[in-house]
Length: 448
Image (cartoon, rainbow, N blue to C red; front, side, top):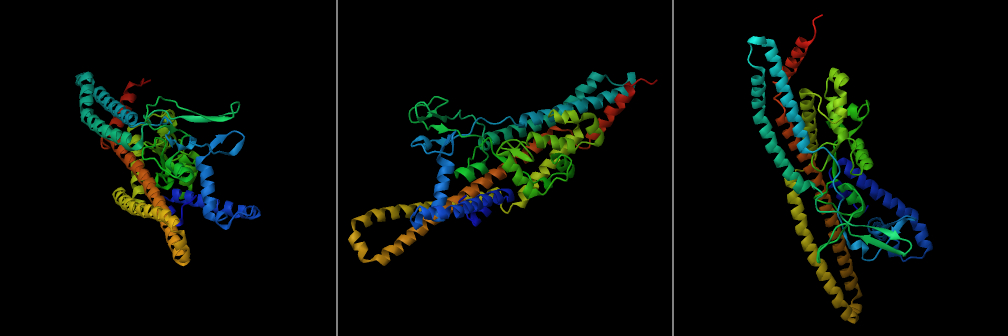
């Protein structure tokens, strides 16, 4: 709610920019509506200012503990010192499962093609078992390549996407009988270890808006894909047969409604599509005949056919690459900008330390300062400007960190798609295997 226009724009992703702008506009409207009451209370002008209101509203939003009878919550001394740790990760599609399904589909297609060839050759043909073995051997290198990509992606996901393995965080509740707020540790802590609290599942955008931080390793983070970047048939599946909707508005709605959970055109922190998006991809990329006979496979989170699975992950990869291309900076450029802002913050922090020292020394020479009131006022104004500049740099740094997390999810999804496509048979072979399966099925049917 404290982001200025330039800081909101630094998020780059239209849905995130719109969400932060909306939060800032809501805070401004609340301040305007509260001003008459603040005047009635005869608060000093500086405590009626918008800056004071934002401070108070942010404190209530981010630092209070839940109370069942008061929506404002309660400020608990010492209780809000603990940092946030997210809960265990959600159940989402995994890289291993998606690649394993593609490899199984590839093996089945190869076996069906070999069986069809054996049936066509008849008794004079080669042994069917040998043909199946040859097909499995042929699929070996592709499966090996996919496994290598999968291991690489899994390592990246554990490092950057969060695996939730740090342990359960504590929580708290009001003990009305004892008239105290109790905090509970859910794991054992050693002396000197940091104690964490968990206050729910939140994507990084929600953490940024309501608590003023983002997590580089957040298993509940999501990236929303603009629906218009997906194939039209997939858009229709997501919209329940509708037109698919506008990209920015739909993506913003997805983030707001999902709040870090599965839903819509979402990518999870590990780069995998949400269950809803995965089903929409498989159904939208299947042929009409496949949807009539095999839609149940997609609804049970299984691939339908080699062709539809290839089209689904090619479409998803293209959407992620297009989403990255639409953003004005790359991950590498963001890293350099973050380092530059970190350097500026170090300078600002050093200046703030000097200001604090000067303030302490100023108390000792108050009489001399009073003699030069204009100089003191000018120095205080400069100190205020430096504090505001430091706060703006901190918000800019948060915006850069958030968009880095967003782009990394998109990048992980591209790597995941490559792993799945590597596990599938080449596009030129897929139709032949499908045709072979159909011929084999026809030959087995009774002729009367």
